[in-house]
Length: 121
Image (cartoon, rainbow, N blue to C red):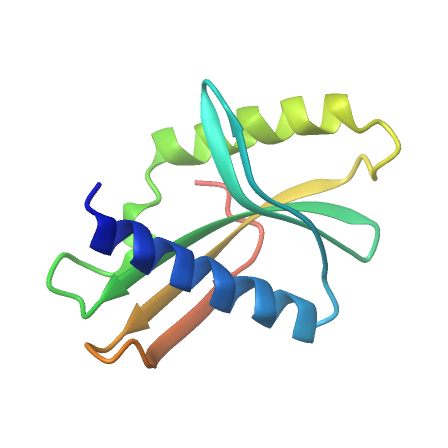
């Protein structure tokens, strides 16, 4: 991953975290990593533990950002989320996976923002 892609990913994660906070979610952790996976953002809302995968692109030359969340990636998020829940038994047992898909222009302004809730593959 080039530095540019890394910066793009961070920018998208910051946008997503701000959006979540502004929409009543409580962000409790970001970039939770284990050897078999990573979760970009972990949040709580309505007594549900939500694992959020954020995908950010500049333009759609390589497809829409949400198309990058493959079944394999989704399984990775679910598995990592289950492990996170085991480490934090005080958190709600209801869980879901959301995807936030962001398209930016070359100036990193938001062209498209989509919050897809309860992604099941």
